[in-house]
Image (cartoon, rainbow, N blue to C red; front, side, top):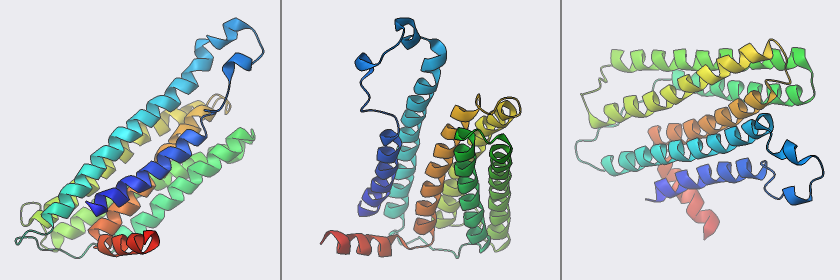
Length: 232
């Protein structure tokens, strides 16, 4: 349960950071302007998209927290046999970090209306995300080639389940990112909201992956000890 608490605490920190940027302290009744502007659908869409993403991240975070909980409880069973992780996962982790940073840079330059740089970093982030997924498939092949198949041991099953679930969520994000890239080819200002949401989603998946990687690598116990030392 402590492992799950650490996992949820990290995700809660992301949620606080996300909500902090949503202008929750704004007082719309003090704003000046035409009343009709407040009900303009074009102005409400970005706000609804942000809150929709926030709700989706909460659901996904709960899903991965449950997976982490199931992993921790199953790992104490007598039939559990941990397997060494494919080394390519280290490279994949670095690639995902590059993808997340590239989308953050794309968001930064999009807000500054530097179209060329925004598009370059947007494509870089998309390319790195695709490379990450390809690397995860390679990790599966290496894992199976070493004799660690899905039904051989519960530890193997969780490896495929956890990495597969994370990969599916990233692949789904690539669909939205592809639409954002297509929009950015025309007017970068029209794609600014999409770039921002994609960057937030990528940061979320990066943190989730780092936590899952630590869990799969067996570092969860060390993290718990560190957290206990910080609060004691």
